[in-house]
Image (cartoon, rainbow, N blue to C red; front, side, top):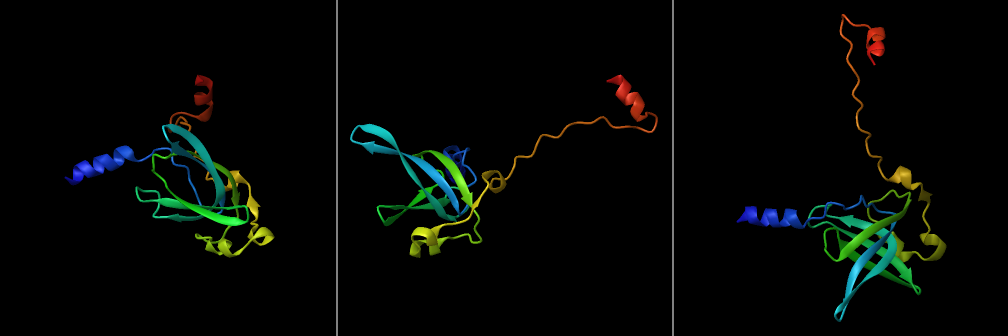
Length: 146
């Protein structure tokens, strides 16, 4: 029984979930169904919390201010309602949960920006295979073979 549940969970987990952290400004494109029509709606704001990792129960909270009113939405990572997630920028933060932003408005809520290349960890380059030099061979012999 548990094997069926695990296989169902693994089949429904998304493979292309980006590395989302607190302090990132992101745009989440969500499918919205109105009557018999379906459209995409963007929700852009700052990630104030990431909870439960990136597993099947993982979720992130996005906050934005619209018309002077703070709006927060919680998105599960693996929900089929999310079409795509765009990372716009990264702020320098020293906490995992940015709940203190709820009490701040205007300039007080402003955070220091960081280059996005520094924020997102670089992907390791593929290893280049170099020929090994044995005791009998010298570096000149190997370079002449090429």
